Image 1 (tube, rainbow, N blue to C red):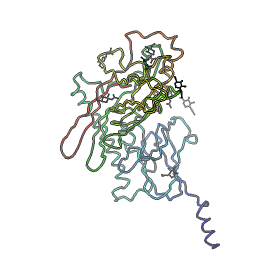
Image 2: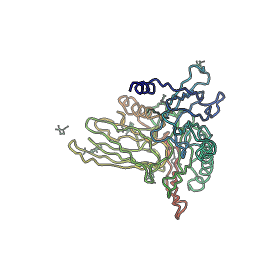
Image 3: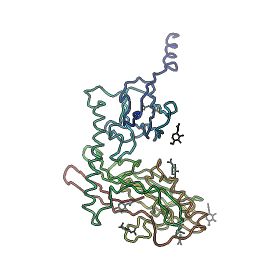
Image 4: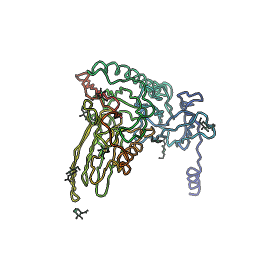
Length: 408
Ligand SMILES: *[C@@H]1O[C@H](CO)[C@@H](O)[C@H](O)[C@H]1NC(C)=O
Ligand SMILES: *[C@@H]1O[C@H](CO)[C@@H](O)[C@H](O)[C@H]1NC(C)=O
Ligand SMILES: *[C@@H]1O[C@H](CO)[C@@H](O)[C@H](O)[C@H]1NC(C)=O
Ligand SMILES: *[C@@H]1O[C@H](CO)[C@@H](O)[C@H](O)[C@H]1NC(C)=O
Ligand SMILES: *[C@@H]1O[C@H](CO)[C@@H](O)[C@H](O)[C@H]1NC(C)=O
Ligand SMILES: *[C@@H]1O[C@H](CO)[C@@H](O)[C@H](O)[C@H]1NC(C)=O
Ligand SMILES: *[C@@H]1O[C@H](CO)[C@@H](O)[C@H](O)[C@H]1NC(C)=O
Ligand SMILES: *[C@@H]1O[C@H](CO)[C@@H](O)[C@H](O)[C@H]1NC(C)=O
């Protein structure tokens, strides 16, 4: 009795695990984790030391080396200045809970040809030995294959977009925009749109259904990893008693996902706009460019519980910007009632920046700002989008081709 009690105490709080140190990124900007793999016991800690550049430590699965695992750990993007001293650099720790293999990748430039993961920046804890099917070597090969496919698809899609688009292409591969542009009205300066990249990702949903998704993307936007062929459904509450908000006000969604806007009190709408011109319809000054979606107004009285809805389908991972068009008794958009899908959180065009532009242009100080002129708009233009079955028959290989220009 006494002996087993002391054994129990010895096993519980007094076991202190070993600490393993891993360098994230090399001293000269190499896209590596060092070491690449290690074996650790339950209770051990793995401490990741971030080197200059901007990397992540994100958990994936063996089968999907470059995508965040559901519920997996994620350090977020950790920028480190090139001139920082080693002892001031940030770290991220992961506790080892058991001996099952843990797969890790860097999420920087995810889904683009510049993907760090696609360049082989992967890591593993407790991976099986060299000749096993799920060895570290095979994991790294799978990551490199993702990178190769992203690069090849970007080149192929650029060619085919130009060939199939009657208007002569949407300008993929155009040089990066200048760092700032001036808003359509109001004379304020805002961050310019980043360049879009076209990417292709093959997705196997079950043994009988492989999809190849081609979509436009931006550094930092999410990967196209739908949970089902139909896509996921995101519900967004619009308004509500005493509320001028979209809840949630920004979401991350994959191509083929649906966003269901549920209109609550009082009388709101959801209209697509652009980052540079948050409170006016997309392409308002250009009738030859697509106008974007517009739900119209949904007046909802304060006793209703059966709320009307309006649904949009997400076609790619380029950001979608939207606002409530109600101006009575005062501008809802100017009060910050705006919404975004796939805004890049750690970039200059993040959701908060978008909301600020809306509040500055149409908010309480809007009276001081001159009305827009019909010309000189810097509103982004939007391309079309289409879904194409690229190969019929039993294989069920379908491509969702989303062709879009600067959706920002
Ligand atoms: C690193 O460089 C930046 C900009 O060049 C400078 O502002 C900062 O003080 C430098 N930091 C150190 C620790 O030298
Ligand atoms: C171990 O468990 C902790 C607490 O639940 C969790 O934060 C951590 O990510 C887990 N470690 C791994 C390698 O999954
Ligand atoms: C209007 O949109 C079309 C199609 O997107 C584009 O080719 C054209 O340059 C735009 N015009 C202006 C004035 O921005
Ligand atoms: C809802 O708002 C729109 C735009 O302000 C207005 O035209 C419409 O009459 C309103 N509907 C109701 C029922 O108040
Ligand atoms: C609903 O609206 C009516 C008329 O506008 C008002 O008298 C009533 O107090 C409101 N009820 C609630 C719960 O807000
Ligand atoms: C996605 O594509 C469909 C079909 O072309 C279109 O109706 C829809 O408006 C697009 N969604 C967005 C958010 O642009
Ligand atoms: C925002 O302000 C512009 C310029 O005054 C105006 O044209 C537009 O209708 C306003 N939009 C909203 C939703 O308040
Ligand atoms: C969000 O955008 C603003 C304005 O461009 C910028 O100052 C801020 O640093 C951005 N936030 C993040 C987390 O990058």
